[in-house]
Image (cartoon, rainbow, N blue to C red):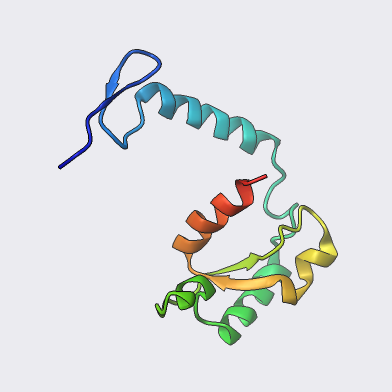
Length: 117
């Protein structure tokens, strides 16, 4: 049994769980504004040195830490900073602050966690 559609603030009827076109456009514009203000990945420290250290770390820690908590074995593809470094180079390079995550865990649970105040 599916849930009923909802009424968007713009007046369109939208299927449950879907975004209205006005919401998609607003999100796209908001993300574009954010990206325009954000320094490049290289400027944030994700350069050749980082890529090399990342590969070494993933070779030593090949499985996703979050998935393993649920008894799932999945290869990690992201080296995540447990505490967001926010430009702090010492925290950025402190390996005790690194954890291996798969892309789905990094892009879902971790991003939600970092958005919380």
